[in-house]
Image (spheres, rainbow, N blue to C red):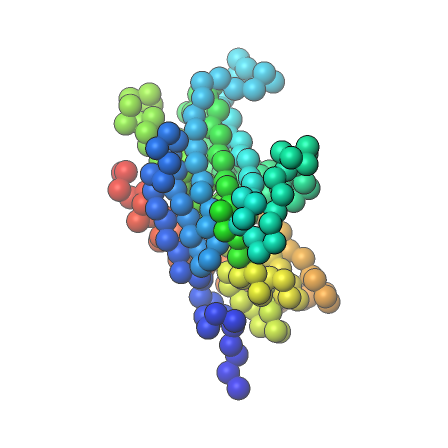
Length: 243
């Protein structure tokens, strides 16, 4: 019997992806990213000035926030503002988004400006952190392109492109871009952030049941690399319009 994934995809196939730029009117750059049933609104806002501890250095700063809409999950997710504090998962993801994007920004060329990246999940079906990274890159690019269009800087201060995807071992097979049905029962779960030039920004890998081999790790990284190429092709359909 042939190996079958819950949604019928092949092991090395990403979920259908759609990027809708300019999704929010008041953001400097925004996009709705859809990866299968997962949907995330990513927005970038640029502010003059940097945090106090950075003032006077001539460098910019990029930071991120992440949240789940209450109705984004089958069981309602209560707002963290009501609970009075952010959960550990939220803090982990927004730090991942922030440091991932900072890895490709020329902070000196940005100048003393802060870029806020807000990633709001309106529907979750696995891979929300990876969709947030990939969508935040597009929102960031569009915001920086806006600065160039308005003659605040000569060129977009990015050193590379960026995207993220999940990989894992499900039912004994390495698979790409896990949805919730796979992610919740995977034997190995890994998130990979990479640049367009092939540099690895971050790996988050966990054996959920048993240990896994170096050979499996290498296979998963190769699988992630091919998936990120597919995601970047979708990103380019949006960013190329501003070049």
